[in-house]
Length: 552
Image 1 (cartoon, rainbow, N blue to C red):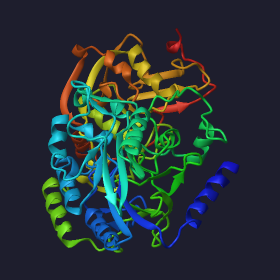
Image 2 (image 1 turned 135 degrees about the horizontal axis):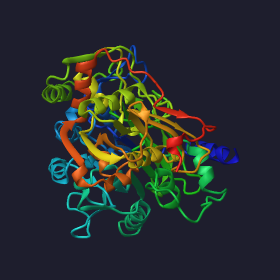
Image 3 (image 1 turned 45 degrees about the vertical axis):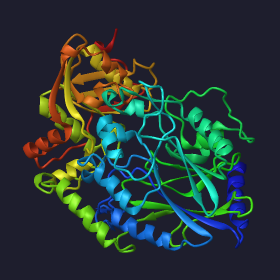
Image 4 (image 1 turned 180 degrees about the vertical axis):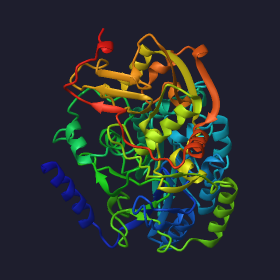
């Protein structure tokens, strides 16, 4: 509690120290846009009567307003923290070109690269990035063939605003290696974020003589910000452990605390906005991040002392609490010219997407209950149906949206599965199949949605021996039987913690050349109305004893 009180007091001191003579630098930012430059409905606010969001055209109106405030003591910048195109049709179908064209039109100053940029082949990504009229930043992407940064990125860029030298450094989460198709990143290394950022903060501060340093990183704050901080650092800000055990990349909180010299960290990757800056109590670095899919625009105003050219405080917009401004169309009338351009691109990208392909008899939510959700169960049922497999599985993070009850269109399916994953099946023994399931229940952060199985497990049993009962297709599991399993090519590459799948011999794998979206469409066409239920696919029973077939 003392730590939280200190942080709150620090925020008040930031605001109390403002003077009329301070310079103002308006920082506008976006992150995890995922192609969301088109109009959309805010179903996350009200699924039955969602407010209308205006996308890029509404953001343009707000951006132009902020720029209109500029004068002798006030200027602005517009930045993006990555994952800019993959997720909505206008971004995915155009491989990001429509989004870059929008960013050029509205005048972005810089962008960093997110993990989902590598959902497409590097040569295709480069063709898209070549269109940008602004620098693409990342200080920890290395071309394996040269040992240097690839030519299409720069580690940092210096800017001058109001006579103040501003260095902006970009980096990409090393989680990208775990989340991308190996073929797409075969020539790319993602080096340690902390080491790379530390190196370039030193360069920007001491060689480039930057007055202010901003890190634009595709990494975010932990969900439980204050409790996580208290488990990491003591009252003096020292790490509680000298060794870092996390298997994922450095997050924004770690970089803010462990790399001194950063004034502002603009993050993303988490899809969770932080309206008021998290201020590290030791380094005083401010960290902010927005929500996703173009639903909001971030806006924070840095107060800069004109004599020392250092940050003396910050302001957030008075019209809405914090720095996250939701892009409601009725509050910010869309810019007409930009709206027309985006709508023309959307019309091409979304041709045929409003065709009804089936119906849902219930609301198919992606909310998980012990690795089950109505939407997740539906997807894995569809996969199993498509290739007539015994068992299907999918990573929890692969389910991206709900489907309302009633008519279902291809657009709805695209929202659920925006990524171009392909259906793959493979033959394996029952023993190997069990190992797949055991990875789900051993307690790691990687979960699985499944179909075709009935699993009972106990968390009181040792890891990789927690399954006490297992049926496949309603029949008792047989460790020696050969089963047909289906999943996605993404998981077959060993992603999401399923490295054991790389052990499957190539001769036992079938690549069906069927996009998972299309498999889901086929399922709706064949079985509508879909009335999926939460059933006994998973059951936790810590008192359960192994059935006879599960014993050694």
